[in-house]
Amino acid sequence: MAKLYYFYGAMGSSKSANALMNEYNYRERGQKVLLCKTNLDTRDGVKMIRSRIGLQKECELLDDVCRMKDEDIAVYNAVIVDEIQFASADQIDFLAHIADDLDIPVMCYGLRTDFQMNLFEGSARLMAVADKIQEIKTVCWCGKKATCNARYNENGIVRSGEQIMLGANDEYIALCRKHFLQGKLYPDPEEKKD
Image (tube, rainbow, N blue to C red; front, side):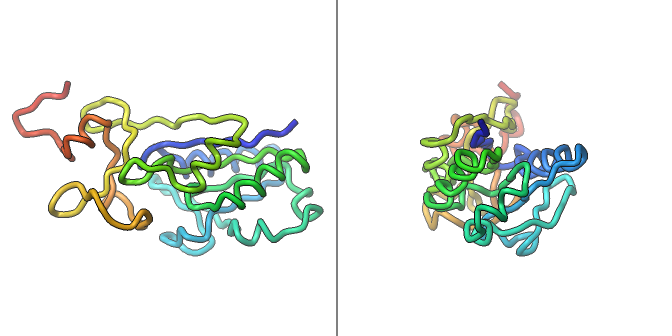
């Protein structure tokens, strides 16, 4: 029985790189993979997944995948979705249908929470329905596990605003909960790592 997987992590945890490596591994073994991402993420091109370390590949859009007929999806051995946090609950339910009814594994990669530590719609639905949930870990500047996605600007951490604002390392940083709550983007010059 195929499963619906949710691989989540904070900013900079290599979620996109993992999605692309997973797609490559399937393809290298002669498997056909439907690689896609949510429509909202257009930073690297409308139909392009790109990781911070330079891996990239063309993909489909999740909106288009959700309009496909079952027989067109059934030719694939796996479905891999990047930036899943931006998906709707209905889209997540369609991905569950692919795993349950078409017996095709679906691997979803994305953030769990936004810059205010609130779940995204897609993340919340996956936390409720995914068969397997696994964290992809990254670290804060202090060396502890980072779980918070801090949005920042020249004045420090941003605590209010729209939930979705596309950005990269110049607007977001992964922090441990302690330093997120303290608003500390970097160590004080005299401070040693704890």
